[in-house]
Structures are given as C-alpha cells and as structure tokens.
Image 1 (cartoon, rainbow, N blue to C red):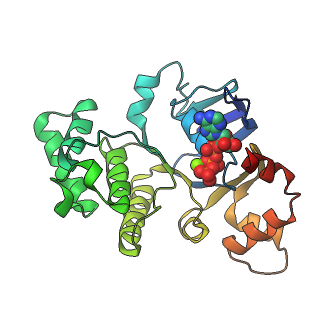
Image 2 (tube, helix red, strand yellow; image 1 turned 30 degrees about the horizontal axis):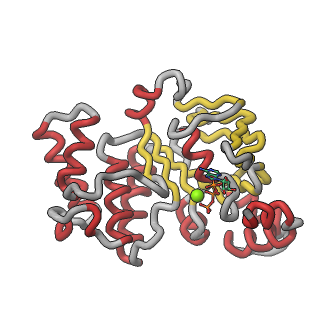
Length: 258
Ligand SMILES: Nc1ncnc2c1ncn2[C@@H]1O[C@H](COP(=O)(O)OP(=O)(O)OP(=O)(O)O)[C@@H](O)[C@H]1O
Ligand SMILES: [Mg+2]
C-alpha cells in the first residue's frame, strides 16, 4: 500500500480549552475509500480542517502525497478537494458563476472553467438552479453545489465531511455514483465522514472510529464488524451501535455538556 495520507500523533486544542484531537495517528492508502466515524463532537471535522489547513494543529505531524501541507498550502490545494460541513461560499453569487470562479482560481482559462462548470452542473443535476444565487438554494442543493465546487480542479484526494446531509434519496444516489466512479476508475482517494453508516458500509472499505479525540479502531470495515461481533454478521450500523454502547459514555457526554 502506498500511503497517501499519513497522520502521526496529532493534537489540537481549541482556544476555549476543548481538546478535540488527542494524539491521532492514521495511515490512509492511495486510492482507498476511507471513512472516519464517530459520535457528534468526536473530532472528525477538526481532523479534516487540520489536514486541509483550515486550522492549525498544536503538535504531531501529517503529510499528504508525501508533502507537508502546512509548509506548502498552495501546492496541496491542487491535490485535494474539500466539501466541508461549513463551506464558505458567497451567498450573493450565482451557482454557475461560483463554479466558473472556482475553476479560474485553480488556473483554468475562462473557456475551460465555463466548460467544467457546465459539466458539473450536469453531473450534479443543478441545471434548474444554475442562475440562482447560492443563498436561494435549498439545503440539499447547497450540498450538491459544495460537492461540485470540491471537484472543479479534478483533485486526487477528496475530503468529504458529511457530504450528503439534506440531499434527497435520488441526489444521494447520484452523488455516490459520481464519487464511486472517481474512486474506482480514476483512483481518487476518498476521506469521508458521515453519520449515515449504511452509506459508509456500502461505499467505503477502510474505516477509523474516533471517540473523544482518540482513535479507537483503524482497519477494514469487515474487521471492525468481526471485532465487535466475532460470531455474527452485523451491519456496520449495528456494529457501531454495539461498540459505542459498550463504552463508558463519560467522555462523550462531557463533550456534549458544554
Ligand atoms: N471552533 C471551535 N472552538 C471550540 N471548540 C470547538 C470548535 N470546533 C469544534 N469544537 C469542539 O471540538 C470537539 C470536536 O468537534 P468536531 O466538530 O471536530 O466534531 P465532529 O466529530 O465533527 O462532530 P459532528 O459529528 O457533530 O460533526 C467538540 O467538542 C466541539 O465542541
Ligand atoms: Mg463534524
């Protein structure tokens, strides 16, 4: 396995004192479909934000495609696409323009950027929304736009932080068709966080479980199921529930009490 994303002993404490990451280490292989699972407040988005250089770590190290993202953030942006839980987009701008601007930002000519915007509008079934301002989109269509924006520059690594929240079933199926196609036929590495464990079960092969900023498990989804239930055949959803319920819940409820 060629390691695409290497994370070593990562710590992150927010200014208010919340320790969101407490020594996270992970290896994610090139071309893997990886999913990071964990309860609300476990540290998933924090890890995504650190790795995509939206926020800085306190200590530890990480590399993407052998590069240190913090020492070369501009270069790394060409390799990664990010659909985050709180993507910042200009609400007053139209869907089509946002996609074109994104392409221009990544060095495409006006004509190339327009072509790419049209492709993505088609792919994400946003034709009827193309002239609407981002602020006028429904929640699910906004998620589609975020995902389309993440793909404009054809990244080799995709960070998807709860990408399908609010999408209708058809949009969701369409979205997974796009992502699995990119993963299987173009070898795009996928780093997904989701609370929809059926989606993770269906599409990902590798996983990690984070609870209270600490990695509890890292390995294949099949081996997680086996660890939780050696004799049976539980879904990922049931295996996850069984594991989380078996934990002493103090650390989780502490995180939620603030
Ligand atoms: N900007 C911030 N300032 C202070 N604390 C924060 C900040 N962002 C997140 N946290 C805290 O850090 C911890 C991890 O949050 P994070 O958003 O990474 O969790 P998550 O696993 O993505 O949760 P969810 O499933 O709800 O998206 C939580 O305790 C959260 O309250
Ligand atoms: Mg999150």
